[in-house]
Length: 387
Image 1 (cartoon, rainbow, N blue to C red):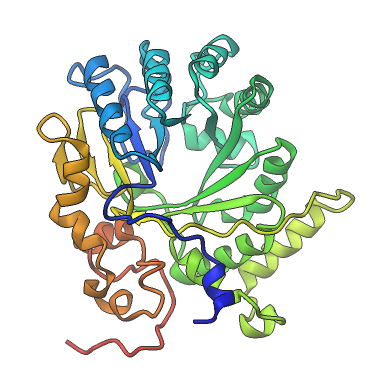
Image 2 (cartoon, one colour; image 1 turned 180 degrees about the horizontal axis):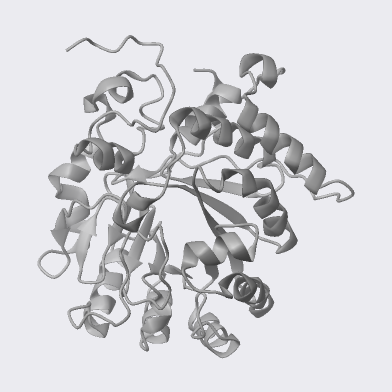
C-alpha cells in the first residue's frame, strides 16, 4: 500500500491489545423511549442488579489504571440520565484523568439544569440520536411522538452549555434516502462528529431492514464525499477505512469507483439541499483503526464485558475480574485482534489489519464472530481459499 493510502487512516499510538482506545459503559438499561432498532431491548425501570455507585467507580478506576493514554469513556444506556448518581460518576472519572462523554435519550430528564451539572462535573461531549430527517421518521424510530422536535431543542441546548455535540444516525433501507437531509440538519446544528450506524440485526433491530452490502458500499462512498463538511464516524462499518485508503490519491474517483443509482441520488439530493449554503469545508478527518475487541470494548449495566454492544458474546464480568485483565486476556478479544484467522473474504482481504469487517454483522448472520462480514461487498485481491 502507498504512503498516501496508509495516511488515509489514523492508527493508534499504542498497542490495541494492551489497552483500549474507547470503552462504552451502559450504566443502566432503563429508558422511557421504545426505539425500534434498540440493541439492548431497553426497559422502563432500572435493574436492581446494575453496577452500584461504588462498583461503577471501581470500574472507572480500572480504566484509569491503564495510564496515559487513558481510554475515552462514554456513559450510555438505556438512558444514563435515569441514574441519579450520574454526576458523581462523571466527577469521579474526571478526577482520575478520564475523558467522560454522555449518550442520553431525549426525554424530560434531559434538562439544561442536568446538562450544566454534568458539564460542571467534567463531561465534555454529548451524543444525541437523529434517525430521520423529519418528525414522522424519527418519532417512529423512537416510539414516542414529539422526540424529533425535542431533539432539535436538546442539540442546541447541548451546544449552548458548552459540550461538543455528536449526532448518531442509524441508517436502514427504509431511511437511507433521508441521509442528505439529515446531513443538512447535522451541519445546521454545529455538530462536531456525525456517527452513522449501519444497522446490525440484533435486539429490536432484527425487525428492520438493513442495507444490502452493495448499498452500504454506495453510502460509504457518499459519506467520504461529504466528510469535508463534517467529521464522519461509521459504526459497524469498518470498511469505511478500506474505502478511505482505496480513494486516497485517486484523481478521478468516479472513474475508479463507478457511481450507482443510490449514490447518484444521495449526491443529487445533497447538492439541492445545500444550494445557496456555503458550508465550511475542511480536510476530511481520517477514520481511526479501532474495531470490536481491538481498541474498543463495552460494559453492560450488570458488569458483563463484550467486544461491542452489538456483539452479544460476554468475555467476562468486572464483578469477578478487573477490566484490564479481561481486556488483555479474554480469548475472544485476542482472536478478534488476529484478523489473519478470520473466515472467508475477511481473512484473505489485503485490508484486514485496518478493517477486519464488522464482527457484529458476522455474528448476527452466522453465529460466528470470526466469520466473513456479509455486510461488505469488497472482493479481495488475494483469492479466498476453497474449503
